[in-house]
Length: 479
Image 1 (cartoon, one colour):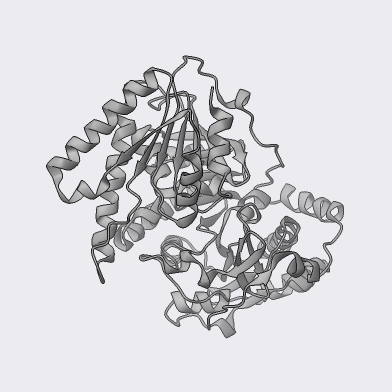
Image 2 (cartoon, rainbow, N blue to C red):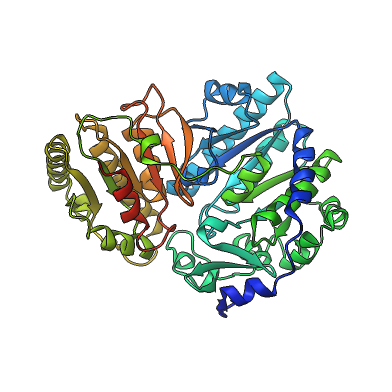
């Protein structure tokens, strides 16, 4: 069933049960986290999943060396960037089998328990349920663990994503729009109809899991601090059934995590499919103010910055249009439709690289943007379009890879774009998350092994911010 009713945001939030005393909740949470001796491993299907955390490591591969380094850290949590949102289904399955195998082997070697969070899009796009099912099957085949359930929690306050009465909403200015009614639900690769999360899980699993069998953690129980009731619900979950978490504020996440940790300490095993809010709370990450220019720009060479715009969602296009008001930026259109003509495409890549270099050296900030019309091959061409989009992404990446001048900063717009530029263009193996430059917009500090060590690399999700946010970030970093 599709929910087509938009809600007024202010009125809806005013009608919700009263928020509990956060001091009480924080004390309970700290107490539970202190005794929660499990390594938290977040598999991120694009690099925007670190948009709520700081001071944590992101590894861009899942070799034994990287995962052992993650386990060896004092931090309870680390991220592994899988970039699977840009993969085919077959590539996704293989990657998740590999990563789960290495995690399981490392955990056994180090005698350390772990939980896995599959961090997906807060607007419900991605390879679901393939990713969590593959993780479940792989870990269960190689250990004596049996997963009781899967916790589904796409709440992400910074991006205006809320789950109320089991329906997931995306805030658009003053309205809450059911997720199934948004442009994200019409995604050619990862589209869906349902906004009710139980029905969404049923839809995506082709009926293998019924909405009527899901367990729903209500805002009424969460906000009345009925932690025993929530824990009882969690203790009853079996057969990898789905747990739908309602949340409209971070305090809801905190209460839910208290109940979850108690259930796990009592022997329950869960996998998680969540957006970025859960990772901050279960990882015990403190609040931190937005990053300043002084914290981020250490390079005073006088070179210009580089902005790479790949995402095609409506919000990115609106932000790009506002960015064009910046007189200090030189704009270069990259005609990606030439991907259908290899020789012309090669020449186009070279033109963009050479022009960008010349301008950056002169102290000019450059914005390279892909042609705004989508390449449409017609009906039933999803996999072919995905493969062409990978070629385009490789080309965008190669622009950064072949730059011979170090920009003062790099902003990448769009999840897949930012992932490919980070791992392939900049050659990052391990980055540290510095924090956020705007709510929900993370910044990596690149590792010593990368092309430009210690650079501020802004990972700007395609679907986050207002129309002016990209312009504001560019203005903040402009020297």
